[in-house]
Length: 332
Image (tube, rainbow, N blue to C red):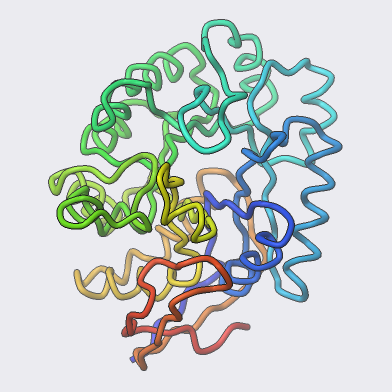
């Protein structure tokens, strides 16, 4: 059995820097046509010079792969001149509430103090992507942030807003209330719940932020993806950490899913007789919503089995050591 995907896009990807970037970039650039690159480095990617240098490093790491890194600025208060200079080089701007996740300490502390930048982005047609969590009880952080999305969508109706890596049924329901509100969802949030992370022995390699939620939340996300919801896009949030940062006290948040994204998505959609909607989820919706065309790439997968390695260097991938039913067999 075979299945073909055209120009898959990862709308949320972490590549890190240095040796880690060199190791993990090819694991995405081989399979994907493009990916939105997260800017929460240390220091953050919050100026044009740093952004252009980071893009050069990614392009060097991708080698000969046909792959477009879609660059993001880390949200801060920007002047109109800064945004005008950066506009042709960026896909959008990523907002992190201060301290909400990895390397987000420089994020926004008070949204009402940065509305001038929102207005400039709306005027210039620059998309806004948001890590939407409060600092409340860990299971409720996304739900508590949803009124912020609603407020922004109402106050800036021409600003294209993406709720990043949504994890709750409530977030899925919010999608249909505002024309300018969109969302990404990860592979792992379509599959796991909090029970997989901490229901038995703690599995640090499944710990992420936002944390996996309840079965009913996973079901709502899954049904929206399987149905080809027109405002929902795939974003892996693949976030590599060395074993020393995962198997330790103070475990870092993030799953490294890049090597298994497409095979596992095909497996998942096949199980639910929804392969006809996978193309929209991994590419078509993003192209239509954002009005861009990624580089042409055709990825063929076959149901021949693929043994996942236990490690990629010092990083443990999602589904490490498993045999996956599907494998990528040709890229053109």
